[in-house]
Amino acid sequence: MKIIAIGRNYAEHAKELNNPVPSVPVIFMKPDTALLKDNKPFYHPEFSQDVHHELEIVLKICKEGKSINEKFAAAYYDEIALGIDFTARDIQTRHKEKGLPWELAKAFDNSAPVSNFAPKSKFADLYDLNFHLDINGAVRQQGSTKDLLFSFEKIIAFVSGYITLKKGDLIFTGTPPGVSKVAIGDRLEGYLENEKLLDFYIK
Image (cartoon, rainbow, N blue to C red):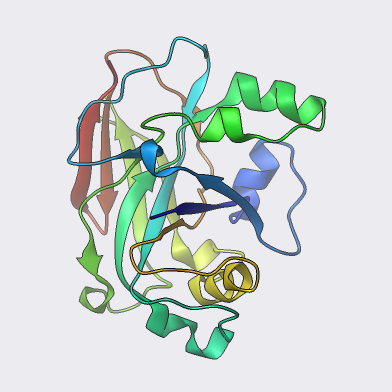
């Protein structure tokens, strides 16, 4: 199982980090050791002083595909979830300044909490999904799939042109604006269409 993530897929998030809005999807990856399930606590790493939350819709790939045509891409995922792409922003900033890869900032252990998955058929319109993250009871980040720059199908078609997708792979589809630093003791609660799917603490 591999975790593929899409950067800068909401224009307002790209702007809040002073990044250009991309013309093609920005791709990075996390290893399977980044996965954190069952609302287990996230232990803040000692190597970063500035870990940010990035709430995202996550797709689960349901069959193998390579060079998938966009018009058929919807058949390659059948479930969605909420996930958080934890990012060591201080490390990322240093690496970006030097033109280096982001992996140390994105791929560290437990940096990809994921909720339980729900069948996509449960939702009337996948491009009108509202989701938000509360921290310590206050809304910190919120978004809607109406604002995606690249659709789920566009992402699957693009990624599969370079990397074969296999059953069980996860795709993090990008984060809306509102990312910010987390601290030990914080409680993170993630909602998809007002159903709470994530609920865990930073330790």
